Image (cartoon, rainbow, N blue to C red; front, side, top):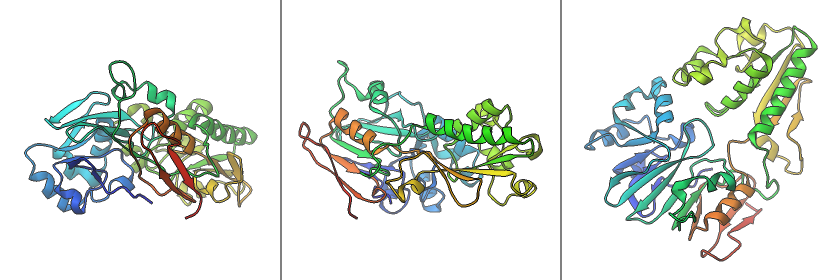
Length: 349
């Protein structure tokens, strides 16, 4: 459950990933990515009125997120207020507000937000999945000598900061297991079909690409799903709205295209994270559950506990604010900068 209030400490004029209540009093609005739990209030008339009252477009996001949002019919009314920013390029908004978008590694268009100037140096990760090596390559997080900037405050994604499962497989390994399950099943019998179950709207694009490459077949999705990617042609090229030209699907379980498949001929592969936290002692990436050909593969959009700890140790912020109550526990961070350890995990709720 998110515990982030939407307003950035030190920058009361800034609202991020929450577009209701006191956040509507902000002068600058930021959207880190296009998952619905970070878009609350985004369709509201109250937000439109707040944006309309501002002297210029002030709903900021990455250029990729802006393109995806523009193809989403429910948010067409926001187009006049969108202000896409380039990732990695600082943007001076006022004398006291400099912002830089940084890649977050969560889903297409997802960014972290670095705020600097009058309110101190603050990094908001949003939802992120990055290791320490990737952080070292982000120049805006470092000073001219290459040292990490002194952060006054770090808002960090703690979704899966659970001591029972400190590490999560990277998405390359998870995609490898998906490809293995699908290709092995299709090779057994030409009548076999595979269905990839994906609950989030975005974030599985790497898996679609890998399946297209491994099987030589596009992934069947609904026309509505395909329309989401019309502005990302490299992803759209991996997909098809025509079910009969492929044996690989990513469709809701009771779609008509799957009901046509003969009994015992369909293998379902569901990408999950929370499911693997039910019993944290189970140390596996793949579980066979329920029906004979029903599988789950551990696939995470979020940083692991170890990655969060690495980030905190590397950046050494003066204060850390967890943005999410993690699955199966609670989390506390303590400082000051230079003291350690930075992270303290409490397994009780």
